[in-house]
Amino acid sequence: MVETTTPGDAAGQLPNLSHERTAGGKPRVLISGEWTLLPLRGRFDELAMRVKELAADVSMEWDLLGLTRLDTAGALLLWQAWGRQRPPTLRLRAEHELTFADLAVQSTVPAGSKAAQARLSQFGAYLVRFSEHVLGAVRLVGQLALDLLLVLRQPGLIAWREISANVYRTGAQALGITALVGFLVGITLSYLTSKQLRSYGADIFVINILGVSVWRELGPLLAAIIVAGRSGSSMTAQLGVMRVTQELDALSVMGVSHTVRLVLPKVVALAMSMPLVVVWTSAVVLLGGMVAARAQLGIDYVQFLQALPSAVPIANLWLGLSKAVVFGILIALVACHFGLRIEPNTESLAAGTTDSVVISITLVIIVDALFAVLFSDVGL
Image 1 (cartoon, rainbow, N blue to C red):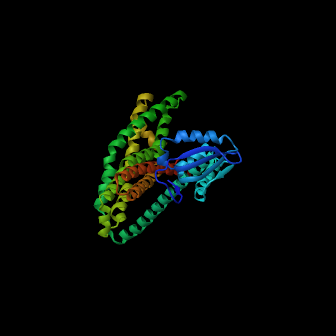
Image 2: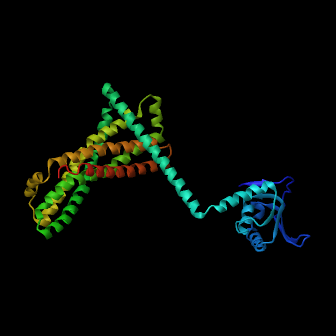
Image 3: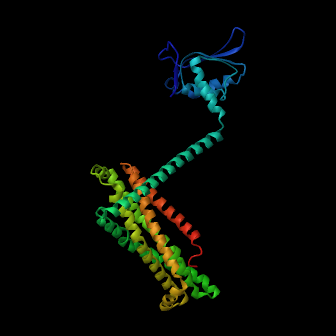
């Protein structure tokens, strides 16, 4: 709290306010004593009411030369009681002038401008954080490119066991949840589509709709979202725990590169396992759709499987697999980026894991939209 003090302070002096008339008969208010937070405690309302009543007389002179101490609390009490403006006649010490000048400047700024400044400041903070993340991601990608060249020249540096372990965790262990979700989504999609097609007598086109939508869009996107929430968060949490337990610092002391030993295996493993997960998920979605089509439209399983290759051009399969590779690399990079930025505390670990999942899913959807626009004429 800002406080100004005059020479010759009298300790324990209470805030005082008196009303008198000058020799010329003009009304005058004398304010003296210590107008600081502690002496004013319990008397704010009383003194504010008295000052406000006296301030109603515009001819009133205000004499603050008797103040021994004045802080922001006392000055704000007077300023608000005066109606947030200086009285026409005001006498005060030079050391108190700056306090009231600051209050006058703050009062001239409209409330809307203050809110706009706050929003602008918040936007600036978000922009700085965004730029830091972009620079960090670019730095990570550049370091990975250099490390890839290094391991190509020295294959002995490749962490085969780490790659194999990540393929197992991100691929094999994800088959159960992707199969369950994919089968239910396939049943739902086929059921709703069949009801619409039946009204137009176009039952057989359910195979075309399911085949193209699943292999081209739904399979890769569904698998990527599940892997981002399951495996991406696990990668971020793993690196975050290593930061909290100072394992990353220990690797640095031993001269082991974080990107070669930890990041590169995760990126390679997810780029390898994602296409396999996408094929598995798309097949299970089609299986669920085939079951629902049989129940709703009476389309035989053999008829469905025989008509599927001719209804879905092979370009859709390659497009879906290409998306899967890009999604896998993207999810691994985002997960490792946030994992390496985690600070050695549990709060940062929780926030970093949450941000990793949210950003991964958002980027997957954005990249999927870009694929849809760039390859709109492929396979259709």
